[in-house]
Image (cartoon, rainbow, N blue to C red):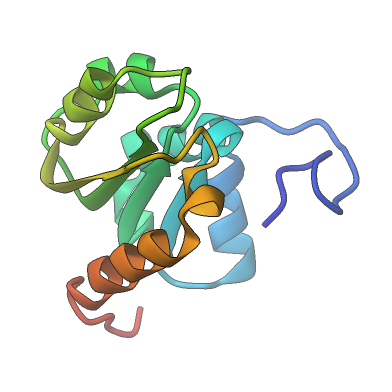
Length: 143
């Protein structure tokens, strides 16, 4: 989805603390894997913190809010793939390691030579790692 007001979506006022939880319920899509690059972290982290049961996994990619939420998450049950680019100037690698440590199960993926939009700078490597991560998740069961 586009963040409201970005991409091709119209802007409207949203409550970032409940947006994704309410969207998942409204769309009746079961338990999706949340892929959250950059600014979408401000929408994804509240879901991961308050409603991990609504998602099957979490893939933050240099997500906004990482330092704040890394402190608030503890033993989160969602399997996570924490991604960043080695040349990203927003966060140091230690921030991503600290985030990964807050999940019961997490993998770290540093995309060498990639910047903040690491998935765009290294799309083949990102997609290969994402598909491997998705294949390793528990099979979905009907809700």
